[in-house]
Amino acid sequence: MAEHDDSAEKTEEPTGKRLEDARKKGQVLRSRELGTLVSLLGCGLALLLLGPSLIAACERMLGAAFVLDASVLRDASVLPQRLRQAGIDMLVAGLPLLGCVVALALLGPALLGGWICNGELLQPKLERLDPLRGLGRLFSLKSLVELVKALAKFGVVAALAIAVLALVLPDIVKLSLLEARVALERSGRLFLLCYLGFSAALILVVLFDVPYQIHDYRRQLRMTKQELKDELKESEGRPEVKAALRARQQEAASRRMMAQVPKADVVITNPTHYAVALRYEQGGARAPTLIAKGRGEIAARIRELAGEHKVPLFSAPPLARALYVSTPLDREIPANLFVAVAQVLAYIYQLRAAAAGLRKQPSPPDALPVPPEYDQTLAQSLGQGDS
Image (cartoon, rainbow, N blue to C red; front, side, top):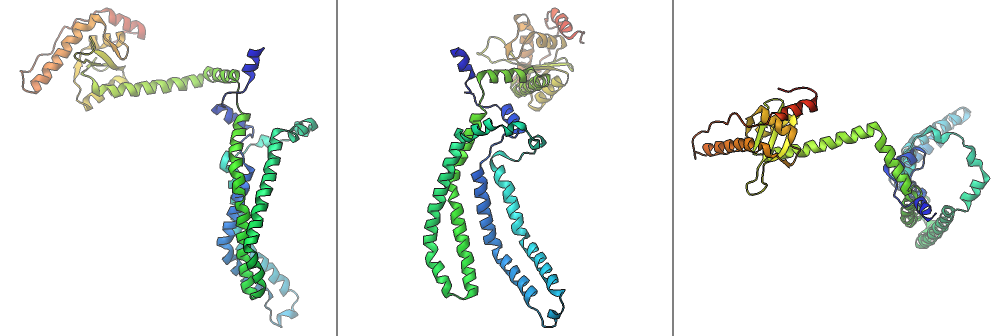
């Protein structure tokens, strides 16, 4: 029973698939306080930047709408037309500010969890009308946290509001002593100052809310060890996943193998079907090591890399096929191929000495001793002979 309880505990972090499935169901990371803060501060800054042009547009609109000639007053249709035109002008002047408000309303919620569009979320669900579930949500830990946040938010905003009002109170009192135009301008600045001050109070709430929302979101999506095993089994059991994993593994292995070709002492070829790269460290391994091998396109790539890095190529079809079929990567060659490979390496070393002017040009070895059973093994593994 204890073992069963332990297995039911959600102690494992959610996997990428778990997070993606939750997102498809509409369960995404959100912070309402962060969205509110971004909207309020953004709108305040937009008012600060666009306010002068908006006020100038209002002045022009009022001047055009309500400055009338005496002759115009006799026509009853003029005033409605001017009011309609004033409304259109005001709407056009306020479009930049309205655009900022809409953009901020869309940006704020997407800062943490991004946007999501899912038609299934709009479908009505009867379980949402379940009173028992409603009571469960009402008296849950999340509701308690939301209540604490609301009280904290109210307290912080109220404290900062009192502080800001106390700071600007002398300026508010002086407004009555100023001219109407100057008083209106000063009032607008004081309003923006108070607005930004009140909005900034939410920064403290957001600093608490965002980490909590991240922690709570991942806590809700945690998995049991059994769920993790089941998901791993399901993922590995899919043919497309297996094929993709196998392809990635083969690609990574091919890259690692190709990186070893420039370190080879010689590349033995078929000359076109097979290519095998060997490396021998004197005083190190007791036999040469096969560091790269391939057939077809891979063999062509090995030969190409060998040519780019001036690694000698040696054509010995039976030996190339025997090494290809008998020796895995990064393993020493088998004992019954020692003599043949030693003759090839000796020839390569003699070529280097001749290139340095230390000896005359050597003759390539012929009739290398290669057991014939390797060709039979290769034919069986490929299902056909190879020339």
